[in-house]
Each structure stands twice: as C-alpha cells, then as structure tokens.
Image (cartoon, rainbow, N blue to C red):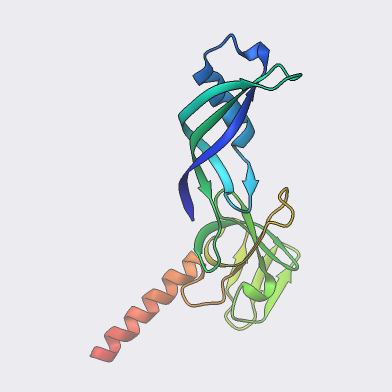
Length: 189
C-alpha cells in the first residue's frame, strides 16, 4: 500500500554547507539520507515530497556540524499481507518467477504460479500441464502478497501467490472473465 507520511528526524549539516540556504540544504540532505531508505516500520521510502518544518539548529561539541530537527512528508510503499498487487514478470527461474510490484521485486514460488502442474523450459517459460497456460518475462500479472520479511533490510523478501481466482497473468484473467460472461448469457437463454 502507498502512503504519504510525516517523518521527524535530526538532519546533520556540516559547516561547509552552512553558507547555503538552510531550507535547500536540509531538503538536499533529507533526500540523500531517506530516498530509497527501507525499514520495517516505514516500508520503502520512494520520494521526499516536501519539508514541513525545520527546528532550531543545535551544535554538538567536537562535531562542528549543526543538527536541525526536521519534519518532512514522504511517499512510501509498505507491502501488506493479503494486498493484491499489479506487476510485471522480470525473471523466470526453475523455482519460480520474480515480479516487479513498484519499488520492490517479489517472488512467486513455482507452486504458487498456477493451479496446475508446472514445467520449466530452458527458454525461461513456466507452463501448466493441463491448461497449457504460460508465464514468461514481461507478462503483466495480478498477485496477492502472502509473506513479507524485513530481516535483511538490504534485501527484503516479498512472497506472492497467483493461485486464487482473478489472480495471475492479466491476459488469462480477461479470457476467464469473457468465458464466464458467455456462459451466464447462455444460461439465461
């Protein structure tokens, strides 16, 4: 889920940067420190929207830099369990598929790609045995988040599934919806 949040932090401004405007310098430091920042509480900070407030600067002895208590608005993405996400398949492996769901990539285990027996071809395609449906790099898909782990902040893990109704490659979802509408029309006749 995407959020607009207010964040409070102390921003360190070295003496060499004090000759510039405090507003510009603080915004630059906030962007350098927080854009692409990841944490379990905030999720993935995508961008800094603006500075709300800059407090009085304080100088720490033996440091020489000024520290400003700063409140700023940030746009974040925090993946939540059971959230449905749209994305694009970026890679297919023998153990599953990787899907870009915005600022992060998630993994769909091979057993969670389709409700079918799946085979992997050396050409990088997953194919259902009975349905003959395929999943390949570049396919646009809808998936549900089933696991989120921030144990390693440098490499957070997002697990997804496409084994539920109305999940999977968008082309197959559209195909299924057309068949469903057609069968309902035939029932009425």
